[in-house]
Image (cartoon, rainbow, N blue to C red; front, side, top):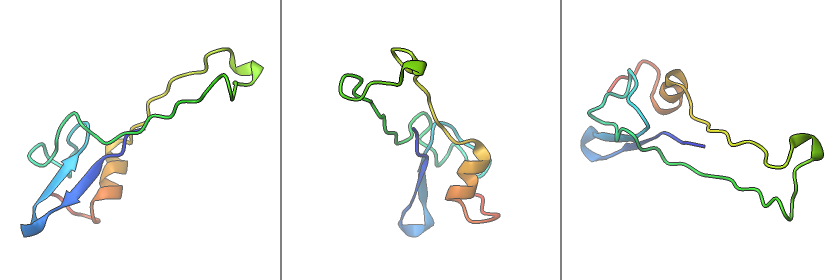
Length: 80
């Protein structure tokens, strides 16, 4: 799971960590290709999946779309 992040710095400057720039966060402030993330691993020996899930489960990647990133990180109408 990825968490795009915006750091507000002194002097009205900002730095964003996101996998790509979006309309409200241009490339000039984005560390393109990097976003903080976490991985969750289930111990299948101690906590096996239910039989209907099969033996291995499924890997999923979660990343918000541009509208969600702007809604969560920017003030309404804000563009950087």
